[in-house]
Image 1 (cartoon, rainbow, N blue to C red):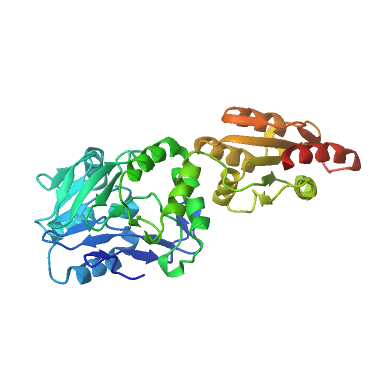
Image 2 (image 1 turned 120 degrees about the vertical axis):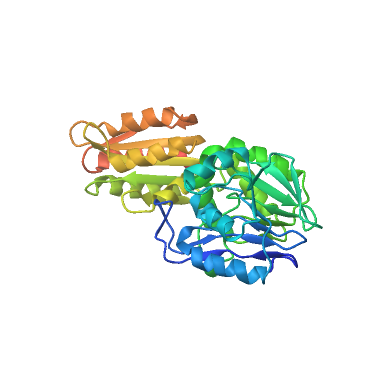
Length: 388
């Protein structure tokens, strides 16, 4: 990307094209970016570092942007290792450097950097505090649990730039960036921040009082121009409101019988007038994308085989993910399969009823081993109950 965000703010981040799993769980076929920025003024501020995987490249970018000058501050918006891995290294290289961070982040410094003495090297800031760099002034915004408790954002008032930490980030390296920001931003949001809708709403209310022209997140592209589409999507997502009209069908099949029933159900949904039907094989498809689709649509049908007097584990895993990501405000249909003692439906219902404002649709459909002609009326009834 263009390293010049404004005349005095530079991008010094790096792309990681070799990573296979972000946070050891999310597939990132298009890589990942670790964003970092530099504000050049009477005082120079480094805005976060990067992941240790790309330490050498990040350091090269930093020195090139400094062009012989020395930084005065390192602002740590988020202590997670993909953004703060070089904090100790930077304080050793630049003895005059002051680390600016929240009180909660200060407590974490020693946890990550056991052998570094930060005594006299830190400046603790909180909501409403400011830091003058000369003509640029940073105002700090507390953003706890978006998505760690120590998170800060900062707003630079002259250039009207919001440094948003992990908010407004997305999966994907910048070299692979496309115009479709929402696709990977949505998958990123619900899997990284999805649990914390209330906290995101709090930050959005604070942001609404600011004149923001550019958003600089810690992952993904710098956002500028008309910011309304990004802000509107974050508002929808953090309110747990559906984004797209339609039905999501998620199935977990052992020998293909449940898969056939789920696919037939998807056909019936389309015939019954569902505006869009998305379908996912939980045994093979990306779990993070299935989580994304569960939140994207207002209605979902879960179809699973019974297993060990419970439910096929991959479906249990999927519903567990929904629980911890605060899934709510949805209508859900259930289809179970069992050759001798169907049990999946009971387990799925129990897990779903433990979530907020979940409406279980009737009928709950049971098939035995393979879908038969006699099962079709119940499937049709479920499709019609969920299609509109």
